[in-house]
Amino acid sequence: MLPTVYQPEIITSLASVNAEEWNALNVENSPFLRHEFLIALENNQAVGERFGWLPRFIIIRDSSNTLIGAMPLYEKDNSYGELVFDWAWADAYQRHGMPYYPKLVSAIPYTPATGQRLLSKNNDAAIQTQLIQYALSYCTENNYSSLHCLFPNEEQIAVLLAAGMSERVDIQYHWHNQGYSDFHDFLARLRSKKRKKIRQERKKVMESGVKFKALHGNELGDDEWMTVHRYYASTFVQKSGYATLNLDFWREVGTTMGDQILIIMAYLNDESTGCAIFFHNDDVLYGRHWGCDPKVAWDLSGLHFETCYYQGIEYAIKHRIKRFEPGAQGEYKMARGFDPSFTRSTHWIRHAEFRDAINQFLMQETRAVDHYRETLANSSPYKANDK
Image (spheres, rainbow, N blue to C red):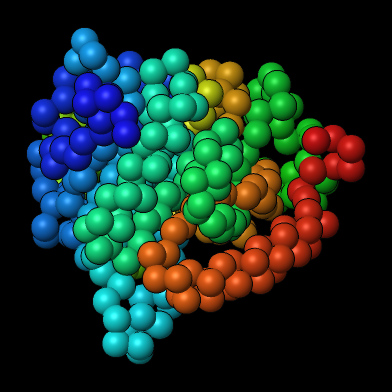
């Protein structure tokens, strides 16, 4: 048993934690782990009972009441907004007359971006171990079906597996900066067929008269945030899903952490016609959302690729950002310079028989994903020996 002053505790709102001390544990300076981002989700009902994300954050304080450890954790009564799909597991529970929900999930809501999940002062592995062990105990003692840690970074996988969790792998498509001097340098590393295709796509957009402007969140006025939110919401109307992040959320993060938000705005005849929303730190650019005027922009060939990918690559090169993660899924991204990259999650199922069955499934799934990635590697858009 840990001394009382080091005993982990559960909090149901990040409002009880000082932003400065929380952010001090965010050693990667991840925009999604910032206090400002997580509290904006709470303040604007993007998490809570409506969407089934109930905060159950774990914190650890030392004898001087200094925050030395933390773990973002939510009680879930559904699998909405996780982007690591376990619907089949929930269905299997239901078919056996057992409840799969509620469960516990350590993740950033609606955000499939790799990062820390076990926050600790000085990146202390012992504190990280305490956090995951407490999460597992809390899961058992409160009869949750399972504990899931989604998109943890590579360094923390070992801690999670050592605690008894099982690994799951998937693939996203990431762009890696090889020290390119500019976009032309990047294109020169591609095979001629891929290079030609990108040039053609970009030419069509430029010839249509579309212009682009890069703005950080703290440079946008209220009218511009209204436009950004309108485009963000339009994608869900055109495709599927629900625009969970409301206008007040975007206004808040634009004010509190706008330096880590990038908006690429597209203009046609001096009128905005679409935009892409990115977050970033010094090392990684995260593409998160995009939207456009359905009366105009859907008919502009290549606008999506230009706004979401090529403009992002240009920004990353200019600002010497090492990696560009444009979001989940999308094998078509490979033709535009994005490599298949493993993403990981870890899972612990409380019911022993289901745990064994799911572990067997995960081993089979991992072999299939490994084979798929090997197949994709044969379709690399880059010249041989140029990666």
